[in-house]
Amino acid sequence: MKKDRKIWVWLSGALMAIILFLAFVPVTFAQSAGKSSQYGLIFDEMMRFIKTYYIEEVDEKALFEGAMKGMFEAIGDPHSVFMTESEMEAASDSAMGQFGGVGLYITKQPGNAAIDEDYMPYVKVVAPIEDTPAYRLGIRAGDYIIKVDGKPTDSMTLNEATEMMRGKPGTTVNITFLRDKDITFSYDIVRENIEVPSVKSDIIDKNIGYLRIIQFSANTPDKVKEALEGFSKKRIKYLVIDLRSNPGGVLESAVEIADFFLDDGVIVSTKSKIPSWNQVYNATKKVKISKSVPIAVLIDRGSASAAEILSAALSDNGRAVLIGETTYGKGSVQQLRSLGKDGFKLTMGKYYTPKNINIDKVGIPPEKEVKDRELTEEEKASYKKLIEEYRVQKFVKENPKPSDLQIDTFIQQLKSEGIVMEDRVLRKIVRNEVNFSNNSPVYDLEFDIVLQEAVRMLKAGEIKAK
Image 1 (cartoon, rainbow, N blue to C red):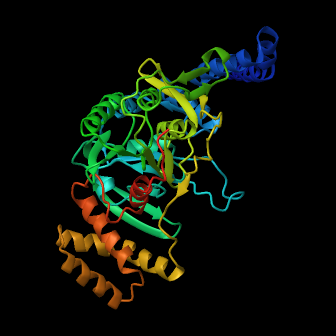
Image 2: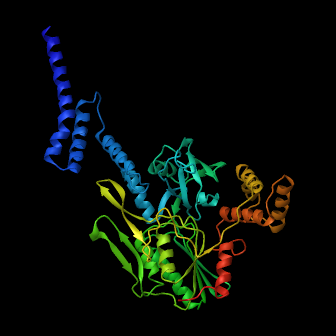
Image 3: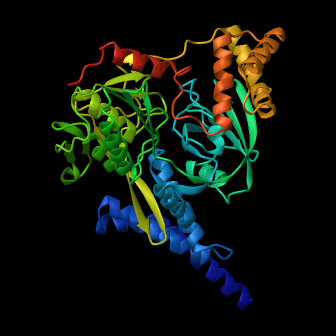
């Protein structure tokens, strides 16, 4: 009896302690600290309470990581995330331009399908990285990743999806993609050591410098400077800067490159909650290319972040004309901070163009819109059939470097099977697949209608040097 009574007294005391904790601790905290401190103290107390009273042993690190991930997810910003030790290492590798994976820049936007019928809860491709497995398979900006190794991504965080796709070079991951809302296709993709190229350059028609900036890493300004100096030695008359499918990168790199073309004016400004952190970046007369050279900048929906900064800087200051499609629309600035071996990335500011416009979720429209025409419903059905049956991929696998005759024969075969598309469009799809499967050329003037228009406008004098 005495033993039972002791147990009962102990249980009653423990229950009363819990009730008192839940009832009075928030009030006590509120009396002794501000509102923000109140929540911090409650968080600490809950950690201690769970560790002390939960029926089984608790992994304190797992508890901490779970709480931190939930905290950042509650912000509702896909660019603000808590990062574990392995995720911090992956982020560091990305910043250095080298990691093991499939070669995709991805994002995941918050939203609600009940409110927005166009909202997709999956991971979205911002841009493929050139000369990587995903790029060679023809994955493009705007595609959705709906499964990774059979697991749906609608319930994954961005970091979880990234972790699943990255891994040791030589290993395989199966990814299912969704394109244009109703085309699904899967690939077993062999991971590679991804060394991100940042710049490619060439000369078009002997006097047009072509500069493709693939991403903005720490060493990109040096590579751009080298290319521009080469153009100057060859006395080019015109310049094309291609920023299509450029997902951005280091803000300071974009600023430094913009300075190569501007000798005056604002490049970009950043604004944050802390006024002392606000900053204006101005041009500093470090011009590397003659002001007499007219510039066309090529953009599309895969041009994001730092690519948009450079585009807006050159356009708003009258130094270049933008050609192509409206850009992605990422006008926020993140900082990466460490917490021991863990860390986090937090949106701590927004950037504004020289005309004081924040383009977040809006993008930058081109001054001359150029894009392929929309397919008819009949053509869309044919395109869907080609993609889902991997017809073009199989043809190129059997004919890695097909002749014009082989391509024409293949196109006629497709048409005899009921494929309804223009010869030019089919030929372009085949050419793209050939380029994806092999080392892609620096530019493709035959089928790239945006580049064609830029060259035409430059030669016709429709783009003036300022």
